[in-house]
Image (cartoon, rainbow, N blue to C red; front, side, top):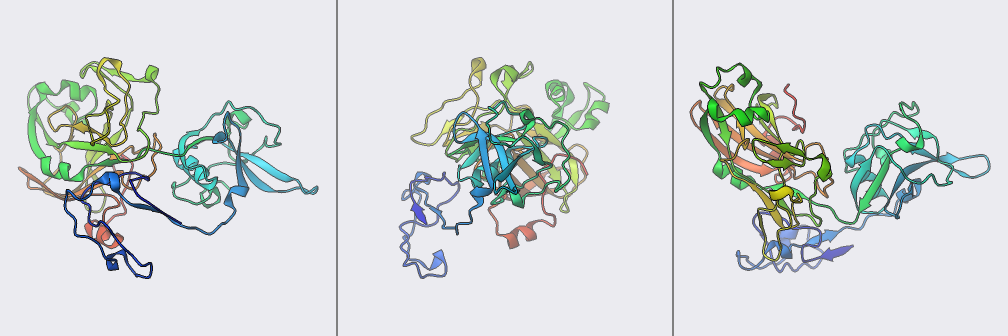
Length: 403
């Protein structure tokens, strides 16, 4: 439907392969189109090309609406359930229990309102005279990529909702733009190493639950823990700043590290077997979010010092060096073998993003009991489906529970 330039749908990452592509429109593949050989100087990610595809009109926006909000892009979600004997449309509410960002994403997409900014389980919107006062849908669960709410799971005709007043109906706040976080997989692969760190240097880490549970039984302060350490850069390649969901007054002060953490769980760090069994207890990392560096033309807006505003600006990244506390996985208890290192950003979908498929990074990991090697580190959507199946034998997981 539309060809876009200038990274209008967000910047990519990694190498750029083609420039000045000239297609006739009859080619079977983009690889068949004439293109210019590219060098690093020829093109930057601020020039990334994108497309908006034409999709048939399905009228999906007619079966759902939002009401009572301050503006047209927010409100309580109402679904069309049918027509009464007088020919009047009957609308109902959705139970807010379990409602979240993924479900809100589907609603905003279905209404053509862009991306979800928030999925609301409790709303204080004006009770408009729409006749929608009864809960007619509950247990809604979406993956986030459905084209309509009707494609999501729900309880069906059995409504199971503990609080049925309109105040507890599901609501949404939509936005034309959204952030999009992606991890620098190459940096993780290049920087990984093992450290045997003395226990007397790990009191802060233990306080913040950065060690395996077996550390509680160690002979403190004697002995050590074996840590897989690595650096990370988390880039915002979207079109809106990434801001923590929690407001400033609810941020948690960490005395050991002397700064506020604005998100309780920002990443999951895990070591898995090739069939997906978790062998190193997943470290649930919480961070102070700030702009460490930015691309040319972008400017830092967020820093942690002095109770500053937290977030990651568009075209900037938050860097975590390998030598800071909790930038590791405690592998003291794992045996030599072949494993998968998995890092998942924003695992609980607390903050809306335009694309969640690139939030997970995986690496092949070989550990011989003394040294460790990482290879094939890649973002979740970087490989083809066939290559991903060859990389691992399990479908992947985004929770942090030990099997």
